[in-house]
Image 1: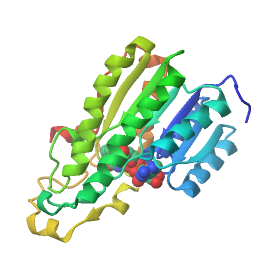
Image 2 (image 1 turned 90 degrees about the vertical axis):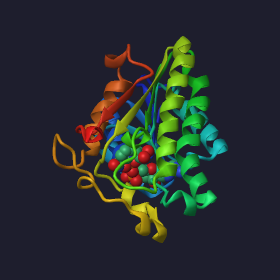
Image 3 (image 1 turned 60 degrees about the vertical axis):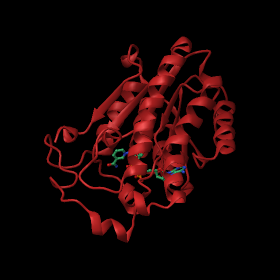
Length: 260
Ligand code: NAD
């Protein structure tokens, strides 16, 4: 790849699957050189191949988003390779362990908080040196579950991490406005991705499950989960100049699921 090329550069975390994958493909189609960051390098490589086949530019970075030194190294490598960082889509996340609070293991709580929330702090903090001269856009994937209790229990760590991301986003938007760095959060409802496959549910959860009020994942608008591609449209909007006066905002993309 050419160092210092003319195209803009977008960093996408969790780029190997689901929302991150769809956003990476969309941003590449729009002309961004895309830095694909994921724990699962093989998945990200498949996304890279698809982008290159479509004449786009992408490179894979094998990064645990909760590991500060890897985040710093990764962003430095992106800047070295492409000459700028214009957009950061801070998206990687896990459901982690669903368990009643009294049975939640501290290490499980920490894994969710570190993967979902500490990573957001790390990406914003360590992107600033590369974005402060020319400005840019940071988009954080939170969730409608940062602002409500969902239809079951056991999601205390996940919901806390997602609410924390929104609070942090607002502070970052305020602080970084002076550099013309916009910071926004997207709050998806249920989206058809791989996230449920790695969710740990403790046995104790079954004993205290409260009745589900409506079918899981149902959304008034479509009666089905949304698609990663629908979320990618919003990510592109927030990345682009079309949203040049939007910062410090959380945008719901949930087919009105959060209103149920
Ligand atoms: P996904 O599991 O399909 O994709 C997530 C990707 O993140 C995977 O490729 C995974 O390998 C990667 N990842 C996980 N931990 C990582 C780490 N420590 N370092 C680097 N990469 C890591 O899930 P998704 O649904 O696309 O989730 C993306 C984001 O969307 C998450 O933050 C999630 O909380 C949020 N979200 C999802 C939904 C939904 O219904 N799918 C709803 C609201 C919010």
